[in-house]
Length: 304
Image: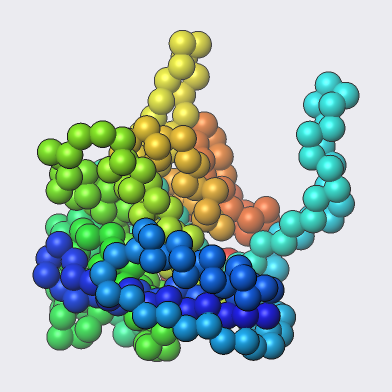
């Protein structure tokens, strides 16, 4: 087995020096060379490369809890088999999505998180929504960042995951703040490329969360939009920017998606789909609607 490591150093639009390292493991040396040639052609900034041969051992982390296990699944519709003998495993505590309209209580649900073990990324740059939050989350405590640049946010998450073992929760509030900021920064650009870049950036941000340590929970919040068809059917999902992201079901990358809403003045989470993309492990929550408290949600998922 060969490991290829490619490091890119470049300067962001904000004048911040950034560094990204990608690692790939491939069985053949020729494939390692192909990866480097691709980066030479499409990469950015100053690059360095290394190729090493190493033995890779496949290990399972005992800390991960299996929340879904499906063996030999087959599904048929009208006599046509559309899924054949599929095995699926899903582990708990990885990625959580909190979605809802503005004012539905997404940010408020984070109020009981421990600031000593939580890092808050405020992508909307509007501050948090409860009294006294500035004493809990600030630069002096080294647990707060107001930033709407998706590439910088990716860098921060990576650094926290690798260098700050005391941080157990990272909150990105909201994904839409990253999307809108990128759209506005590139508003004068014409063509389809900027929408492809935006979709790839958001997709990579969420996907990379799965590559970090198992004791780190990453929570993404997002605004929603409700679509209506000609028959009057309505469906609520994450609000996205651009047709490229519209074609992607971003919720598919989250282990749990909770729909935040305000019912008769009380903030609630919807735990299962009801004309929405809400979802949670079967049996993790006793009720369709639960109290708006992310700490209780995390406890329920850990105990599941």
